Image (spheres, rainbow, N blue to C red):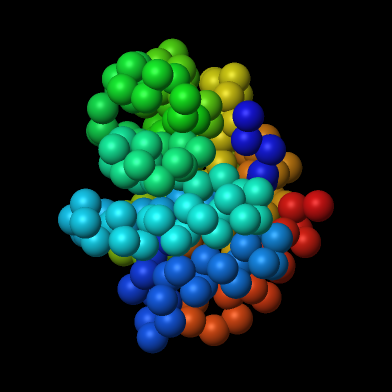
Length: 205
């Protein structure tokens, strides 16, 4: 069962000129315990090339690694879990393919999908976008804290608030029932990634 309250989502393009492996090492050293490797544009060969060292880092730091969508890569690198987009395969399919050995997280953008994923057996959800976010400019409308609170009360599994979450917004998300926060651009950076991560962790104490 996931105990971490900070879920860091990778984007290697935000790290340049540093490598994503280097940045993940820095934020794990800062105390982050859960990483989602979300490099959706990579083919299996290139994804495996970065997933292997990141998986080893996570094992060294006793941290959880989730792989976005790719069941086989998650199995091959010994990841703790798989993260499914809201329109991806069912949780049951993942359970069958992995002999129920992986945790399964799911993205959701509304209550109906959240309840569906809970019924399928998801371990936890990310709900977005709570606030406007520069990492997904196509989302013109944020769902806000009121909808976050509604969704949290419609399911009985942990919900991580995602989208535009800054350190000073963490407390607001937790106060309406979120179990934690998921962050990409607020942490993943070529500079100060460790300090950024610590700022979130301090607000999650």
